[in-house]
Length: 322
Length: 286
Image (cartoon, rainbow over all chains, first blue to last red; front, side, top):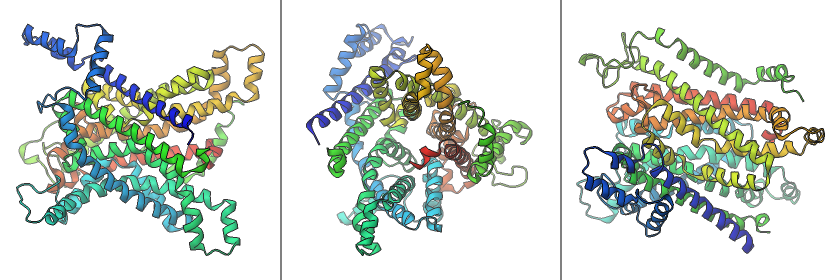
């Protein structure tokens, strides 16, 4: 990738993040019924507390000073204090990130593997029962609320079959003799949430892979490969699949926002102790600083991941590199 | 090209499109239930039952059973269909208005207007929409119209992109140049020459956006942002989840609202794909 392209992408990502920061700022301070002024307007509050809040949010200063203060706090990693946890928001979020990362990563790997496999077979056997089935599955999984799928899986696997634990990341009040037993317990807790999230993603990935494969299979180099006398398996493995995989990289990156949204719902249903569960708790307690911190962190993570994917894509696909 | 000459031809194509017909039938059925609403079920969806009515399995009296507060599930479903349809359609209206204006203005005026608007659109396109919607909904407070506003104002980015692409393509066509050469102003060109050609795309997109809006409403309400005085299917699922119905096996109170969402969203998706296929054969093949 040329340096100019790289700089351009970097600037675009930076501008998107700046946009997120501005939206975040306006949400908190300018919207009707914003929490800062609501706190300050509370009639039961002493004049002293009002003054303290005004000072904390800089409400008595001009808007550009307020924005500067907000920006300075962000740079220092200060996202304010949570109302319900009475701790710095940045710290609380930091503690919850690993759980969300684990869930998202495992679900993504499952979904990418299964989605590509289904997509390849569906394209290869185009029009077959399997192809129609894959399309139907994609459509149903797209139309289904993610959290509802999670609830159904809980009802079936935990409520009915008693196979998996219903909630949390680790069994409470259990001391594990060996680290391996602890890992097994965690995997049992991870199984259903990861399956739910993967199921939601598989349909989309399979559909993209299928369409990409169908495109690739009509290319001249496939005809050439067949004319060379390559076996069908070799054509698939060496020529069709690698080329069909290229659009997948973009789709996976582009749907990261969707994945995060799914993970937030799945965590809520399974009480998985990540950002999603945290967000649900923050919502219930109307903990605005925490909510905004989560919005900010997930947004920046998605923009960052998209940027990385863009750069990686430039290396995978030589046509973009030029 | 007059936009209406094709109406009969479109209908003829649509009649032979099984997917589209199935979608229309599903939406029609839900619309009928929503309209007939109160006449169908003899219970007030908000009235709490007597203690012996609580969590009754489906049977005579309450054909779909009752929830944890003794409310009739069938009545709640019917009432929910009104809210879900109303919110889905109203939010879509806002999304389409914003998306069309942004897309047409960006595509038609080009240059820095295009760059600025598309950067702005990209922000909304890439952001994880759920946290943004939840922050907005929490700040505005739980009411049906706030939910409409939140979904409408966060869901327009995809539409803006599609409309812009179509506007760019049409701008290059000869009749646009002819219109300008005989002295038509921007407003007239946009309304009389551009819009009729963008409209089919807006139409197909509207239906697909409705599907997403209904799903968004369900998710927001499930997470407790719904208007508890006007419960939707998502609100029902919120109470079902909070009362632990999943692990206690009270499936009659979890399955129906979710199935309704699934069916209605599938109906709109079917219909959207069908129209997309009929109106934009080239776009579908690409």
